[in-house]
Amino acid sequence: MHRVPCLSSLVAIGLTLSALAGAVGAQTGAYPTISERQFTGGSVQLTVTGSAKIDQEIPINTKASFGDGGMTWLQFGNSGSEEPNALVTYGETGEIGITVGKGKFIATGGIIPGERSQCTGDVKVTADLVTGQYACSGITSQDPETGLGKVNITLRFSGQS
Image (cartoon, rainbow, N blue to C red; front, side, top):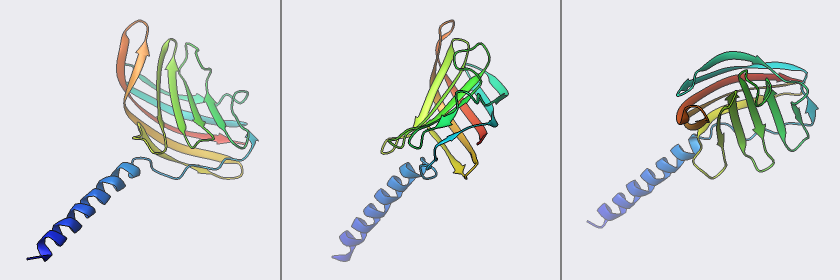
C-alpha cells in the first residue's frame, strides 16, 4: 500500500519533466557561435501567411549584414522599404530575433532563452556559411492601413562570407 503513493509521485515527476522537455524543445538547436565576418552573398526564401501575404526570395543586403563576434545581423533586402525584407539577428544574450516587413507592415518574433519562444528552427554555422530555417506562428503584426493582425512566418536563409 505504501508503494502506490511512491508510484504516483514518480508518475507526477515524469509528467512534469516531460512537460518541461516539451517547452525547451520549442527552442530547437543550440545558440550558434558566429565568428566575426562580413557577408558577401546569400538569400532568404520568406513566406508570410495570415493577415499579410509574402512569398518571395530576397537577396542578402551585403552592406547591412555582418557579425562582430558577439552579435550577428543578416539583413535581406532593405529594412523599411516597400519591397519585402527580413532581418535575422543573433544577440550576445542568446536571443534570436526575426523581423519581416513590406512597406509599413512589420512583424517581429524570436527565440529567447528561458521564455516560451514564438519561433522554432535551427541554424548551421561553418567558417564561410550560415544557413538556417525558422518558423514563427501566431505573430502579432502591425500595418497602419489594416491595424493589428496575426501572421505565420517561415524562412530559409543562407549567408556566405
